Length: 115
Image (cartoon, rainbow, N blue to C red; front, side):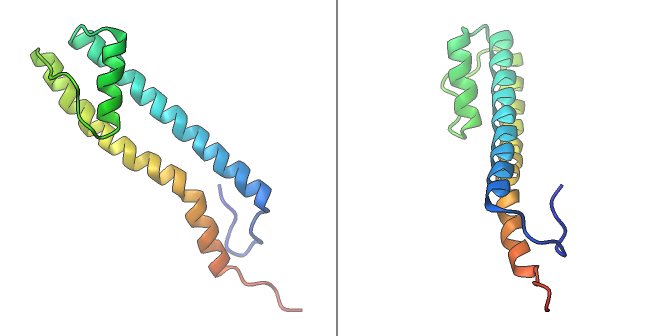
């Protein structure tokens, strides 16, 4: 996916496109996770779509649910979704910073050929 340490680092514009792709992938991942949370709250707690959005986005953002679940299914879902969101945050953070860390490491390890 990335260039080898023996190759010249990519241009700044190519790097910015790579970073934009990673941000796009991350956005898709966050939106998909948010939709799963909304669907779960809507189905298990019979919340309106707006309330389901609020609860799912608050859990995804690390703040916790606004409304405490009332049903057993809702409690299981909220706990599972909270753990899932924690893993997604770690994954998305890695996807976003990977090209930046790679570029920094590549600059340190790339040696221009001597003439």
